Amino acid sequence: MTGLTKVYGAGDTAVRALDGVSVTFGQGRFTAIMGPSGSGKSTLMHCAAGLDTVTGGSVLLNDQDLTKLSDTALTRLRRTRIGFVFQSFNLLPTLTAKQNILLPLELAGAKPDPRWMTTVIDTLGLADRLGHVPSQLSGGQQQRVACARAMLPRPDVIFADEPTGNLDSRTGHELLEFLRRSVRELGQTIVMVTHDPHAAAYADRVVLLADGRIVDDIENPTADAVLGRLRTLGV
Ligand SMILES: Nc1ncnc2c1ncn2[C@@H]1O[C@H](COP(=O)(O)OP(=O)(O)OP(=O)(O)O)[C@@H](O)[C@H]1O
Image (tube, rainbow, N blue to C red; front, side, top):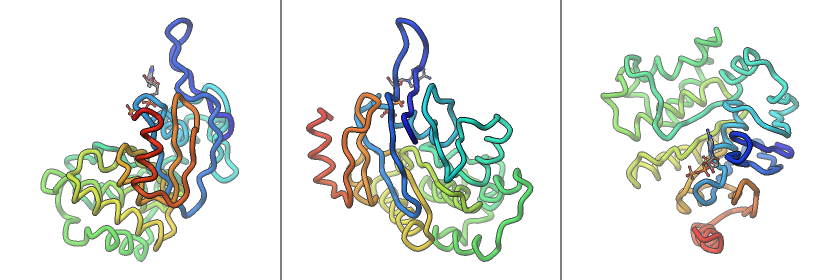
């Protein structure tokens, strides 16, 4: 992202949610985005994933500028090249886990690579849950289905907005372990928003936002280092 700005509203009520953010998320890396409430984390993820329009700046996915694409081209690109995992899972309730996982590829008119599908399902520990609908799955299992759905098309990047926000701490740490494995073992690129310094410590890098700007960038973060830095921002 280069010089990314996002202004909501206009005139006296305008809110500058992103104020010239330039950042690169490396391939095959796990990056956490942290910062105080209202600092622009979700806005950054949504603009980066092409879920929201930008006011200024550019978002390059490899060489393609998402801000220059038509709605149709963006929708097509999002189905296969960008994965998104939401705090609230966002699974379709009447579809089985397997049908949910296959949905983005089906919408794109593509077939899954069977070997990759087995790898993703095994990495996320879902093999014996594929025939269940979401209401028959625990929160942690539902979120793993959401991760498998995001990973199956082999997207260039997965964005996860507080993926452990609705999980108890043990299930949350299990999910983070799966995410880390998918980066280390499968080469997935993940960018995750979190409020939890322990969750951020699973990442390779933490980018800190405040008032719509990047204020710090921590490599190989520990929970203590992140917590210390957040305290200086008054969190
Ligand atoms: N649709 C919108 N319309 C107007 N203002 C918005 C909108 N979405 C976000 N904002 C404002 O933009 C700023 C950044 O919001 P954003 O949701 O990106 O922050 P955040 O860091 O993700 O916050 P939180 O940690 O509380 O989820 C805030 O001041 C927020 O009120």
